[in-house]
Length: 399
Ligand code: PLP
Picture 1 (tube, rainbow, N blue to C red):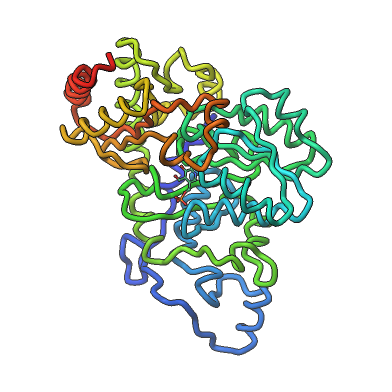
Picture 2: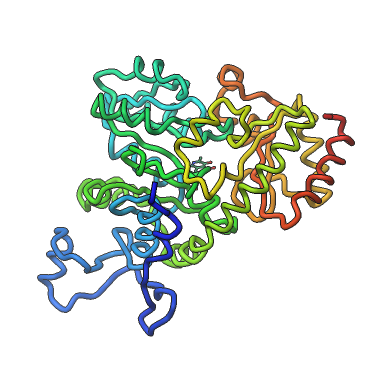
């Protein structure tokens, strides 16, 4: 593939109003018009390049949106106040009462809870499936299905969705393939390989400094216009708008994403190989032992690696907690739920980010209680980090 997502971001040029190397921040919620007619036309969506009110659009949000669309190879995008703000707007835009969604059963707990407990209240039903079982996915699609939903790399089990194959199914049944690409920015470009819509929680790797929440929806101009429609659009009416100051700071961080992703991936690969050698049950898409290693290789933009997320199994929640507390005390990372920080972050998803999923269902999908999810940091000397982690593992008796 000659599509180079990081180049697409860096080739964009926009200057600040005084020639600044960064675009100026649009610090306004509303905008003046020289004529009342232009204001009317803007309201009707007929005055390109004019701004009305920042819940609809603002220059800073459009700059960030343009860069993210370039990264994902889509016509355009709309940034939102959080990843959930992006996910919920897309679902509510695409589905109405009596519609049906086929969704991977291993997804972020908040998305699972929204589909199962919230969207169902509006008569939108969801069937949760093993996304790696294409026959199961296909047989679950029915005449009311509008959306096929998955994460490229699932949270927290790191299952890999075969986006190309799923796109084939989506096309066959005229439904939309929506992919949450939060775990694999740059590494996978879902819309370049057949997805209709790509979503990110910008809170994670893309922003990379754990100082804000944010989200984005990448897709066609027609779909983004629909989301922004003043009369019926889910982004406009549900109101999960990003603030301009944040859009501007995320844009600055986005420009170094390729360097960070390469380092996250390199460090995660190193640790995953070492952990596996120790005999620990280790899941990382870069390991040949990962059941979807070859699928990931087929889909990926190679130069960014297999991402920064891995899991190990400590055997029990008690051992997992003991190990995480010790690693934090030894300054090897933080016991925290998010991901994509410069420092390694670890948590036990069964009792945190996936706790919305009932225990029986956690068992069914293989989410064991001793599972530790790690977002591997940007450590300059990962060999040294490994030695210290090894000492901690020996101390708590998991190897
Ligand atoms: N998607 C994935 C894969 C996530 O892990 C998360 C949050 O952890 C979200 C979406 C939600 O994003 P946000 O917290 O920015 O709303």
